[in-house]
Image 1 (cartoon, rainbow, N blue to C red):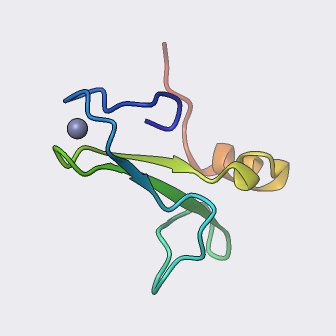
Image 2: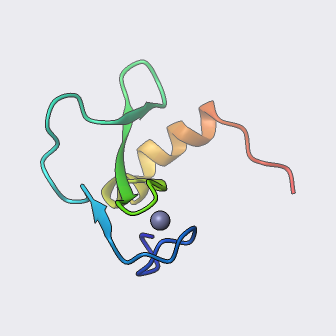
Length: 78
Ligand SMILES: [Zn+2]
């Protein structure tokens, strides 16, 4: 839904996101080390409830964070 303008499950265009917004409360994150986290943007279809989550763009462009991720996760074998 980040890269398409409609929900892939139900086709609705009623999609809401918290991308670029200041998060209320505890922001959603993925720990990649004891002190480093990736922030998550969420996209929600308000028609069927389908939800997509993406690592925030600024974190994707942060090569140190991406290296930590690659060190602590394993690459999917294709
Ligand atoms: Zn939907």
